[in-house]
Length: 222
Image 1 (cartoon, rainbow, N blue to C red):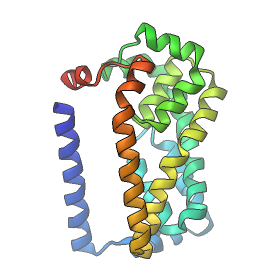
Image 2: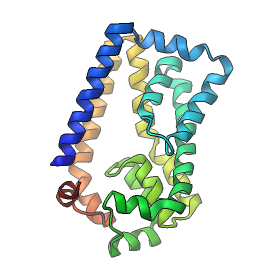
Image 3: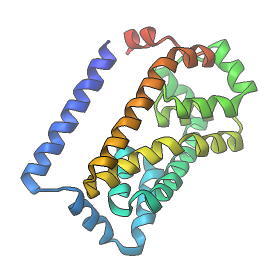
């Protein structure tokens, strides 16, 4: 319960901050696009580089995804962010190799027998499922994958497939903000709602299959 409350507070603060910045400096989708384009040919490389650095800094990757959609539209925005997220996943995996156990202890994530068995026998499927049904954060899954020594090739290929729906969703939202197309906005909102409903009903089954701690237990520890 405490974790949910913190999440709600953070979301509220983010929305208030966005509204304040927009009212003070009138920074909207068009201004963001002009700023990114000012970097010229280096702008896509900047997106990819910043994404790769997200495992090392506290910067919301979702902002980069939205900005790519605003600047480049669905295509090639999806490509740039997909490449960046893949690089970030690889970097997070390497961090997990070194600091995975420490990070897991700080987040109260236990290495259960069921979790170890799934990771050892079905590492690719484990990563793919948790990318599609994000019960734990993007970075945390990267760290844990390195800590559990999932084969890098299996981990990266599962990640490259599993992040496609989320990447497409974020970039599409960014593109719709710039275009102001109510039909596209409605499609995006409806798709996001359907995805959230699916994840909600699958979360407990996936958690039991993966051997992750129970949601209530994690909330009490958070």
